[in-house]
Image (tube, rainbow, N blue to C red; front, side, top):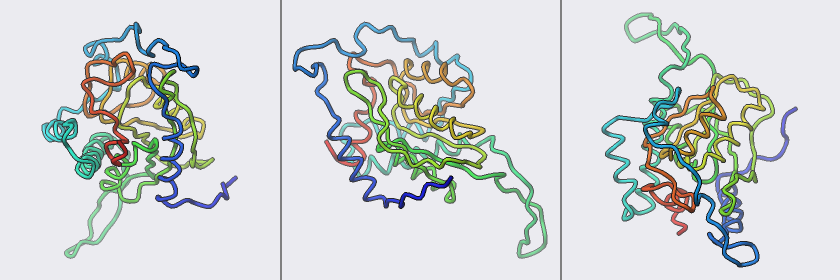
Length: 262
């Protein structure tokens, strides 16, 4: 059954994302009644970097250009326009790494000189950015594969419980693609990534992967254990989560820094 809901343009999507995102931002360290509450990651055991580097199907970029761009991205003085551009560039670099093993099929073509056999991707590719922060990564992916299908999924994090909450879903009911990549810059506790993969799996997609910019060992381990059948690609693996559930050293709020909503 095809969803007949009218498609929304990018401005409408972003306006809805901003409204829901702003309404959902709660004060950290306070309960709904205004009293002090325990910070969400306070006292929670976390794995080390060395422990998660041993996990199968986890790919941490070691490319020198990636390291250079990550340094620019982390810098607190990088303005939003440059930050967004860097996110797109990192998304393109991750796309090259994550598509290395895609299936190909032969294609007969004519060059200006003679006939020859080339190759093309065997089956379509999908990208699902987790709104709103995943939009820049998805744009970078499209620079590598312009005809990729993009489906938006809105998940926001409850700042007290750190649980993912779905508020927007434009995924088709039936999918006929080679692979779909869920993209989100920050893999902190892993809640949003785990939920996104669960939602995509219910569509019967044969192969799924996750792309992110920075991962904390805690979230990376949770995602790998919850979905051992997917590949995980990230540009950098950081040290840990702080008591509030933020990645450190990290880069701050990837969504705010992309769109200038500090």
